[in-house]
Image (cartoon, one colour):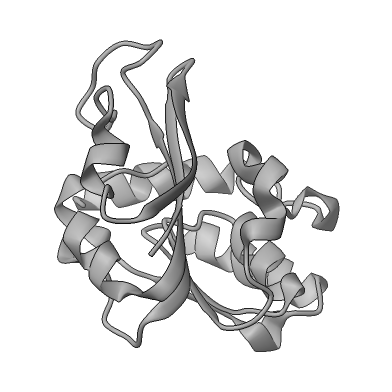
Length: 181
């Protein structure tokens, strides 16, 4: 990402209040499938924002690493983890995903909520442990205008077709996939 992009995201998060603890939860499109998410193991939250999903996973018992381009968002996420009593199970770092998925051991869950970079698809699959869960929500062209960061019709299911689909859909400008390796 360019420095201008990073500044734009920092400014966006600086205009937001740190999230309240009661806002913690799974990506909204997966709330009906919350029981599919494990309660132990390791998770990686790509483009974690203020850490709502990461802290939710940590509260369930997982060790979570959240990464985001915005230092302001990461600071909010660290604060949320501290206030939620799970700072010992959460790590948040500023990472530019233009450089790829950060290296590390296989994870039991990869969450990617409202972020899409097709260049990362193989790295996401490689990072997922056997039997691991992928939860991805992207802006979509289905029900919205096309754009460089919007998934085309059927893109998520095609990109991650090697995984066993639990739930997927497209509409109203979003595409989502919950699948297990």
